[in-house]
Image (cartoon, rainbow, N blue to C red; front, side):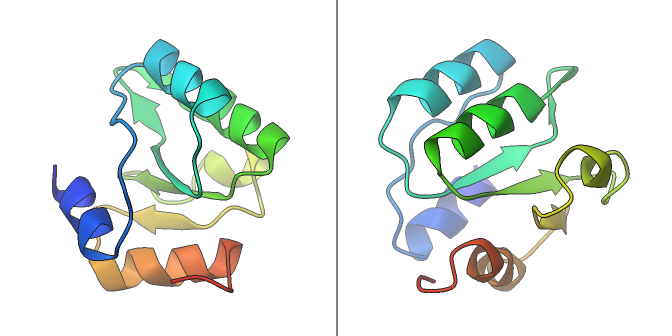
Length: 103
């Protein structure tokens, strides 16, 4: 909920959230999305298939995780990682790296 509030405060409309991989994949493949925040761990499943679907559609995204960059860099070395807990400022900085004309 806190991330949703941050995004709304930053002026975004929130699609989701998705707490399961299948829900996230459905959103990533079908919904109009400008930018995404992906928790690496979704109920025990990694969100990398969602990241791949977003990348295929050209949708920028960042990862949020308790684990830092460990494991993420190998799969998606170019994607910023914000470590939890994070502030809206840190999230905005990460967004600027993947979508510098916005945020």
